Amino acid sequence: GGQYEISGSSVEYLKTSNSTEELIVKGPLTQELYVLVLLRTNNPGIFYEYWLPKQTHSHRGGQYPLQPINNK
Image (cartoon, rainbow, N blue to C red; front, side, top):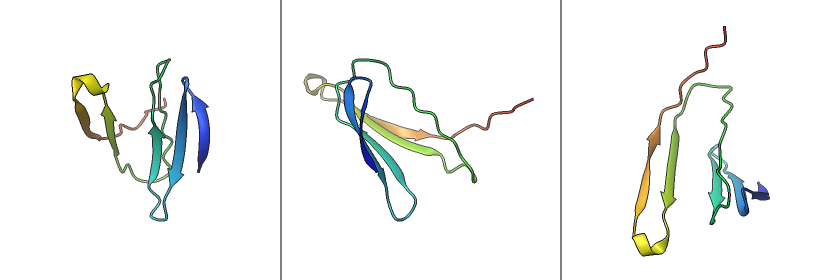
């Protein structure tokens, strides 16, 4: 784990005992943030959640199944 400065905000990286990994960004971001995932095992999918500014009272989340890259 650790703290990092990314896209104008502090990002915390956590890895739990059950091999779950988390990126926690309290924002606000000042630049776009792209997340690249490298898998060495079967595709577990990615679960994500994000919040919009408080005045919008909105919460969103979902599941994004990863797609393999076909290198030819």
